[in-house]
Length: 212
Image (tube, rainbow, N blue to C red):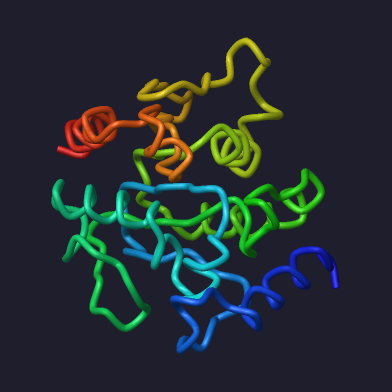
């Protein structure tokens, strides 16, 4: 067992449950990416939410962050519906693939550096398989850094040349790919006004212009 802390936490959450989800059979296992294998847009988040993807078994599904993400994807023509509530809800992504830096729900939404390092090969594999990606949207500083590492740019670029993290910061990579950074649509950011709908939609307008 490589990440005993994560295994213990995800299984504890799945066993104890949240009162409003007591009738659910929690997934309680690692969560893979989801979407169109021919996607030109890749979205990288942090990790499954304890009572979101760790419950439903699909990334960004069943929590407030997912509500923000899939509503925007639908609004900008990248998702078949605005709400993602369960693995069998009929959601389809168009030209978009969503994944995360960590595959198991971490305590306090904070995976350790060691846990992120152990999960990195899974993200690397997805990057190799997603051959059509032209635009990468990183949600949060950790996801931004982990994508750079998984894609090989962290070691290949000098620190001053690496794409900087900041909301709606657009960077052009040496291979022609474009990376857009955004604040994560976590409740901590959306409920405090650090990330507003206007700011969030601005990110997806940039994405849409690049894809079009």
